[in-house]
Amino acid sequence: MMPPRFRMEKSPQERSFGNLDAHHPPSAGLERVETDETWRRAAFPACRGRVFLAHAAVAPVPQVAVEAMDAFNATSSTGELDYGEVFLKRMDRVRGSAARLFGSAPEEIALLGPTSLGLSLVANGLDWRPGDEVVTYLDDYPANVYPWKQLERLGVRIVYLRPRAIGEITPELVHDAITPRTRLLALASCHFLSGYRLDVAAVGAAAREAGVLFCLDAIQTAGAFPTPASEVDFLSADSHKWMLGPSAAGVVYVAKERQELLRPSLYGAWNVASPNFIARDEIRFEPGARRYEPGVLNASGLLGMEASIDLLTGVGIKRIAARLLELKTHLCGGLDRLGLQIVGPREGGAASGITSCTDSQRPAHVGELYAALGKAGITTSFRHDREGRPHLRFSPHFYNTHAEIERTLRVLAEAGA
Image (cartoon, rainbow, N blue to C red; front, side, top):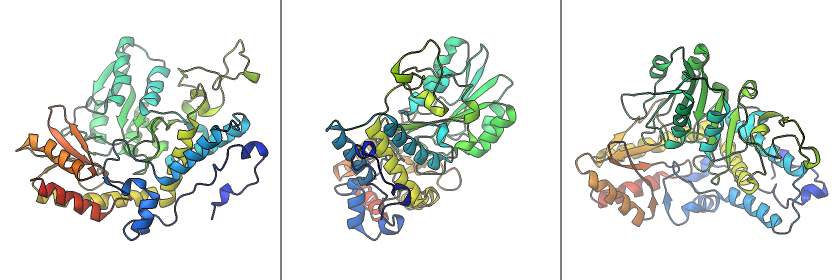
C-alpha cells in the first residue's frame, strides 16, 4: 500500500513526471534480511551475485532507488517534464526526506553533492580574517582537509589535531585545541579508515560554549548512525555511501541562523531571484538553503537518494546502527581468530560500521587477501595509512547477513590469513 503522504490527486503538470511516486520502501526490512533471501536479493540487487562489504566506499543502490531514477529518466525521454513549480515542489519533497534523516527543517537543506562541494561552500563563504584558526585533522579523508588548507592564502591558520591513534578524535582533544582565535571546527563524523565515530553532541556543545562554528563531514555516518544536524552549524554528505544513493546527489545543511553568515559562493538563475528568468540589477537570494543551489539540480540522482533515504528511515536509523554493531562483533571475532590486527574501536559509542585490519607480520599479504576476496565475489576496500601500511576495510550495511560474514572469514582463512 502506498504511504499516506503519497496519496494525492495530481494535476496534468504533476502527472508529466511519470510514475515518480510509485517507489516506497520494501515492507518489513530488518526482520526479513536473515530469513527471506528471495526478498533480500530483489530489494538489494548487489546481493544477487556477490557479497558487498564496501559501503564506506561507493555503495550499490537498492531497487527502490533504481525504480525512482528509471521513472524519471523514462519521462525525461518523452520531453514531458515540467521544470517549473511542479519540479520545485518535487525537490521540496526530497528536502523533506533529507530533513527527517538529519532532524532538521527542510529550509535548512540544500540538495548538492559531492561532500567536498558542500565543505568548500562553507570554506569559501565565510568572511575570514588573518589570524583566524580552523581546527581539523590532517589524516581525515582529503575532501575534509583541502577546503580548509587552501584558506592559508587568506592568512587563516590551520590547526591539526594529533590524536593518540588514527581517527581517535575525542571531545577532550578538541576542547584543548580551541583557542580565542579558533573560528571553526571542521571534523568528520567518523574516520574513514579506523571507523572511530565522533561524539558529535559533545563536540557541538564544546563549540557552542566557545562561540566557535562547527562544520561536519557526515558522509561516513549519514544513513548508518544517528547524525543530528542540530548539533552543528554546517554539514555536508553525498549519498553514495551509507545513504545508499547515487554519486553526486547529496545534502548540505546550513542552520537557519547561519544562512545570513554563510555567503553563497556560487551564483546562478536558481538561487538569485530572477523573475521570468530576467536578471535584475540587485542580488536577492531565494529563501532558505536554496540560496546555495545556483542551477538545475541533479534531479534523477536526488530522486534516487530520496527513495534510499525513505527506505533507511523506514527501517529506523537506530535499528540500523544496532544491526551494524552486531555484524561488527561477528566480524571482529573472526578476524581475531585469524590473527589479523584490527584498528579502531570495536564496541561502545565510538564504534561504527567500519572495520579495518592489517597483518603487521606480513603486510604484503594484506593485498593478497584483498585479491582473494575479490576473486571469491566479495567486495571490500584496500586502504593505507600515512605510514603506508595496507589495510583491509570492511563496511557491511544492515542488509548484509551473518552468513555473508562467515563466508568472508572462510575465504580469508583459505587464503592463509
